[in-house]
Length: 77
Image 1 (cartoon, rainbow, N blue to C red):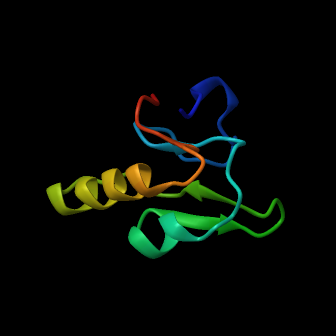
Image 2 (cartoon, rainbow, N blue to C red):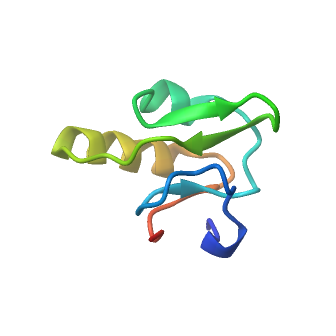
Image 3 (tube, rainbow, N blue to C red):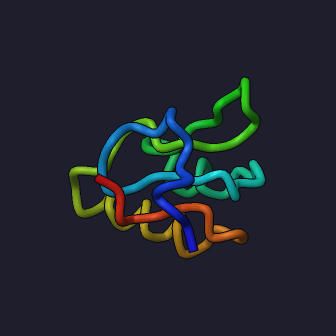
């Protein structure tokens, strides 16, 4: 389970975030490309935009549920 106290600082503030467990597998970026991007310097994914539509929220939930290392959280601020 993702830990908001261990989330990457480059995540935008909001409900969804990626923490340091990320293994850069690309699943979240493929599932929800409007919300997740790769931090090229660090080699991991981050949330760069929070979803505001039902479709966007569903994409982020799908990415979170599919994350193989549970690095995506939905309890951010």
